Image (cartoon, rainbow, N blue to C red; front, side):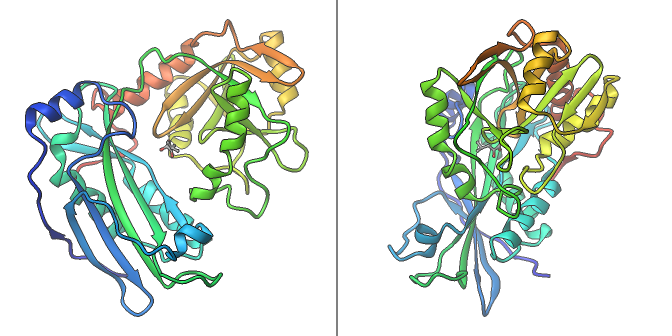
Length: 358
Ligand code: COI
């Protein structure tokens, strides 16, 4: 196992008043902290040249393999501010493990967990002033890896670039606005044996045509159905999906086509704290519609690291649409979101050991 030794090069940070102005109301993903972390992998040397350094553009040859054959993977994880001036990372080991799974599936080199943790910690330490303080706000870390070899052959690259950048992120709203979902009859996100269980760039790029179609139907996101029968509800946009049936919380089971969301897993474990029974079972589009119309399903929400929990107000198909509950944020969604935020902000004990203090 490698243990990377990080060299540090500092830049003059953005002036404090300007940074504080940005941090008062960050958006999502449009503003970046002063530094980045990078490391390189080559077939002969393995991982090497690990550095934290000023954020800057990469210079890449037009024949860089990532541009042509899509060997790119990424993670998204969050850091939160603590009143004692320290910061905590939420479940970084789970993100490291998924990054390694993504790398294996894409025939890319695995970055050992210790190096993943060292890389995100290095960025957090050098750019700690970029972590917003308000409840709901966070510092979103984006580790990623691309095939950086210059070659046009259709094969796994023999050189890779790993990097971590950071971006202050807007609140996961305490009262998030319910979203409308479009059930795409035409496009699928993932099929058995494909790449649906991992975070590779192509999974996202391949979804945008359906996202456009959703927008054309007045919807915010796509609800993905299974590739085989186009009956089973699998995911929403880049998020997992949950249904509330009285005191039961239901989510589709992990399979060859579902991304094992870290937030999905957190919600499954938090549900017990709220007295909810959990079931990982298949749900068809028809079950969902019938359940909502009969009042059995009272709430539906999407969840992921970036958005935390997003209530679903309506579902739309070519045949018509239905409301979930009264179309507003339900009490179970709100309680689960607040329970998650309470742990992330240190307002309740972290009984699951999810928080990592660098
Ligand atoms: C995340 O929730 O971190 C994601 O990966 C979604 C991202 C595509 C914005």
